[in-house]
View 1 (cartoon, rainbow, N blue to C red):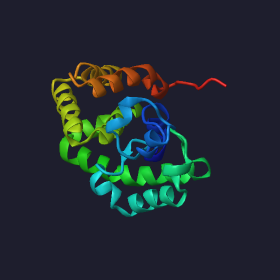
View 2 (cartoon, rainbow, N blue to C red; view 1 turned 30 degrees about the vertical axis):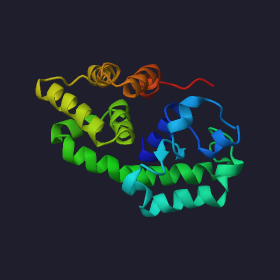
View 3 (tube, rainbow, N blue to C red; view 1 turned 30 degrees about the horizontal axis):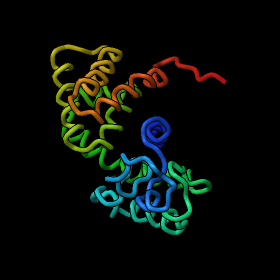
Length: 195
């Protein structure tokens, strides 16, 4: 799978569409859990996204959203309509350097080699890029140790990463782990999509 394919899988299954705090003010969103959230799209946080937002792709990404007057015209969880494919491509361009940096600095060579041979493992670390450096490092340490101790079975390694999320002690990471557990089979070798 390409990184754009992984990004699309992440967006469709784990990260949603658009939210802006203006939606709470004008009634488009009434759920109080959103009261502490800033503007987000596809899991990218405009205020707290750091350098990904100031990258060339990040500037283009938010520029497209602003040019669409999204904060006033889009509904909650909107995927961008005609802009969707372009926005997803920009998110992939924003996140791939983060993923590469984390993987190259936190996974050892054996781990990278094994990860790159299984879409499930690559996906799990790609999504860890959305969770941030601390969580990527947490999963990388578990993965590196398992491989150093002789684990080479892709199914077991994938299950180990999902379990690490579920049992992390962080409610959001755990919730993500439960979602991953229910969708990861779609990335298994030989899986055929119905329809």
